[in-house]
Amino acid sequence: MAAKRWPPTDHRPTRQRGNVNPSRSNGGDPALLRRLNTQAVLGSLRGQPPVTVTQLGAATSLSRQTVEAVLTDLTEQGWIEETEPERGMGRPARRYRFRAEAGYVLGVDVGVHKLLAVLTDLDGNEVAVRRSTLVAEVNGADRLAHIRQEILDLLAEHPGPRGALRSVCLGVPAIVGPSGRITLSTPIPDWNGLDLANQASRWAGCPALVENDANLAALAERWRGSARFADDCVYILTGHRTGAGLIVGGRLHRGRGGAAGEIGALSVLGWEDEITAELRSANDVGNVFTRAADGDPASLELVNRFARSLAQGAAAMVLTINPDLLIIGGGYSRAGEVLAAPLRTHLQELCLDPPQLTLSTLGEECVALGAVRLALDSTERDLFGFHDRNLPGAPN
Image (cartoon, rainbow, N blue to C red; front, side, top):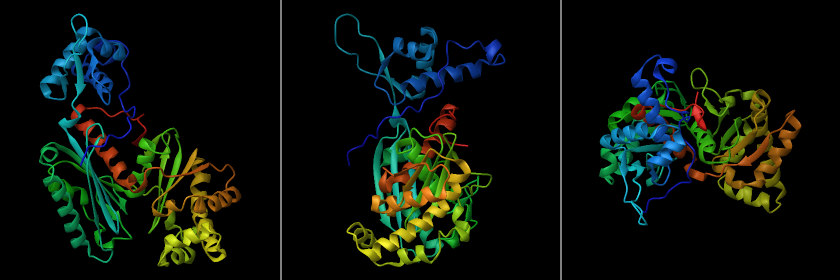
């Protein structure tokens, strides 16, 4: 399939103003100075068209000599290359580009009913997508084997990226500890205690991360979606199950053990009550929303009761962090204003300062896209020794 380029984003390290004096600013550490200069140059190359030494000097406030030294090192390491000069009058200036194809990452959405894997280069350009269906009733071991085989099949179809795979991240319907071990998964109880990060690392032959699916969806919205300009937001994933992810101060908030946003555990809030179960058990849940849009009284009442239940849990988080934005994602977000309108009404009744409510713009790729972002963050730390915590959606 043809590569798809996602919209560019400004994910770059903080620019260094001038050549840093190591004796004053960095404790006399020349290695740290070189790394800071490398970060500045890489940040100005990533996601950009080929640029000249002069342009890099202006963008980084580094001297020409320093820029040329960094470019030489990065070229030798294979991270950048000199491009064909532009034709014109006089001697053409040398231009350089970041080699995004020098590495790849894999983001995987492991749902109860589906698997979606997205393979990208180091600039987040989509290389391949793989989808498959999962049977909800399958046991944990067979589910794990299915995921392993799907990942290996995808990588086998793309031997170039497989040989340069730098990181893989799996999004799961579970609370995940800092090490990538699953603490609690109600939808997949057989996985409780599973060190999934270690398993995935062995399959893929590279470092692996595991994260809660709603957290990754929130991260994706902050990176590419509705929350790009919101420092504080609540993302609610709703469909076969309901979960939430929090962005606080522009960064993903996981909490001490990765359980932040698990508001549905409070049964008194009603996220798993009989109203929610009634909607989910409908054989034609999509048609329930369709009939509600057409004005069917019974369907309107069911959707309204579900929206009230959803608003109770959402309001608890809204009242706690007073966010700029509340994003509704997951399968039920496709209902659009049929669900959003009554939800806004109930939030107005429950919240002192209701945030703007919007629907996810990323569709079914939201969790996988968040997994890509987290894998890219990990790769940047490992390969280039930096990670700008001011980047949209960077985890805390």
